[in-house]
Image 1 (spheres, rainbow, N blue to C red):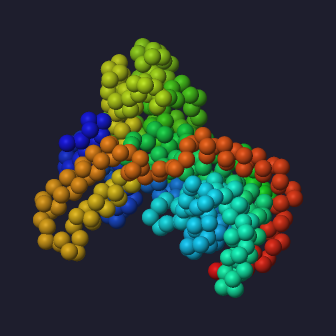
Image 2: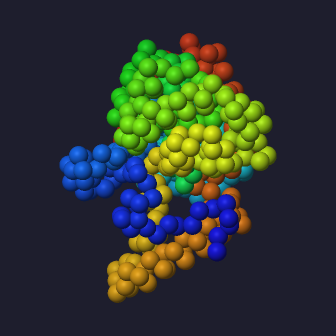
Image 3: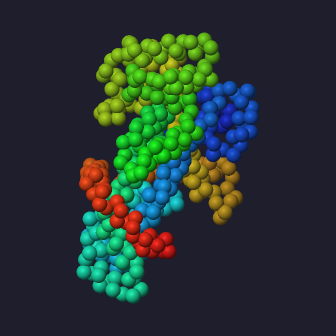
Length: 426
């Protein structure tokens, strides 16, 4: 038993999947994808789509690989290690802050962002720690003197915090989209508009030495590899963007997707129904109904459910919209399912029959869903220990300091070769 608003794990076969959908979403995580796509003439309705979560993760890693960011992230990791790997410094830091410093991990999408963001939020506590008398007495010990001196010089340098603030501000919308697509919720209709907003955001971020264009080129290159006609079709069918001005690229892409999914007769009919939807005719002109897809609406309903309930006037388009807007855009849910199966069927329990293993995975996954519904914060994938408003205020404050301190502080750490060599040798 699961809560009615939560979808239980679905058991399906390839045959049943083809019967349910006239168009299939295949992930490049499948090693046999090339063999399947080699017979594209036999399966003209197939779509290939890169995992959006992994693509955004690779974009974050490449952006963090800039020398300007890479050096300061390495310094941040040095500070985190010293303040968490020693009992005395860890206890001393906890007397200054209610938040804990986080270490980067290999099991999270670009966990360096999470670790750096927490370090930036704990800036005042970290600085108070390294100027305290207790820290000075600990730093006088011979075995800790070099580490303590390096950390103190890093933490008390304004340009270090400015670089971290720039890094967080630059990656914040990318990570927000990454969190969205990595969930089990449908996200196909959100990818295209969010990526457009990210490109605009990159141009407005304050970066040194004309880095904006290089950063924009990196993200654009990743978006070109990730982009699929399904993204444009999902953007078109999202009621929140109804009536938005569509460029020639978007129009060409959604028409290409419709041609693959529909027959020539249905395609022509769908185009006329799109005009009705875009011009807000009939039920699509009722603001009370259209506002139901707003996430802040008290009676919010998912987009695919909206089309199922109110798409009677455009039956062909409604049929397509229910399929596209109900799709996820990443392989995260599949990988989590594989992890659950690995937990059940392992080397010590390798004699389970496939039927028994499937039943155990089904029970395990549904029990987890029930617990997640009862205590969502405990099982949150991207839970934050502070309020979003507090985080925004702290980051905005740090962002404002960039403009005030940039001229004098930008050269401090760059000229400090001792700090850089200490970090590299650690």
